[in-house]
Image (cartoon, rainbow, N blue to C red; front, top):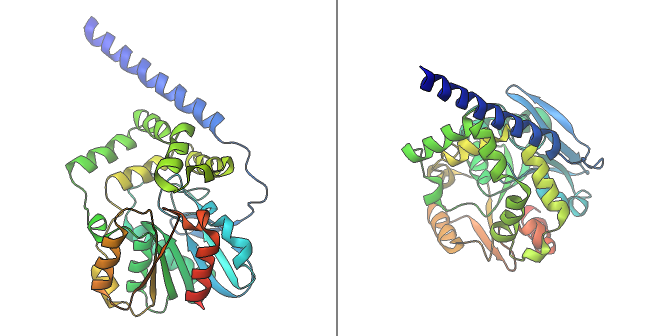
Length: 313
């Protein structure tokens, strides 16, 4: 009995320590938000979606990559150059940035629903759309489910089909369960999204030129991942669990909407990705932009703007 009581006391003490650490991180992690990042909320049926509306002209929906470290700030460098020709709608996806972060398993269809409803309820007319990374799969599936939703589709660094086909298995499910644990999962999430790892993620994984990574970019990413008292862990768990992936081949093959692929020249396996997608639909156009990796809209602004104006117009 004494041994059992000791184990219980140790477990409670450990849980208390994790809880205190997480609370301390919650109270100290969010730096002062920039007052210039004014926006509003779309009160979606599954939670509030933060977005910014800028400019005048034909609607252009901008969707960031799917990661707790990403949010609408991904597009900030393009806003001033695009707002004279387009009405820009720049969203924080559910689970990201300033949008609600419900404690759920996120799926591809969940994001498809959100994008479809946003176009219907907020934009209220067919829009051009651009999306980065895994979020491009949501756009393709939304396009397949709803005709005349988009005028054109621009996808930046859409993962290769073999990556999108991955489904949950025992290993990935275990990772999701880990992140959803009340104390340990939150601590693990904060360890992954701390400032050092956030900076490493940008300099080593996202950007071609690590010297281009500005402190304000790290700050914006860090703030995005820590908004919502650690509830970004549910999105991260769903990503690691492969619940947000889907095979887009059939939908991409049937689409009548013009699709343009953009890849950074330093994006791994871009040749494979373009070959796969053009084999599925030979109407797809593609281009490679030099001197960039995951975020050409941050590293090579002039090139991405030229691509937008040529393709969308």
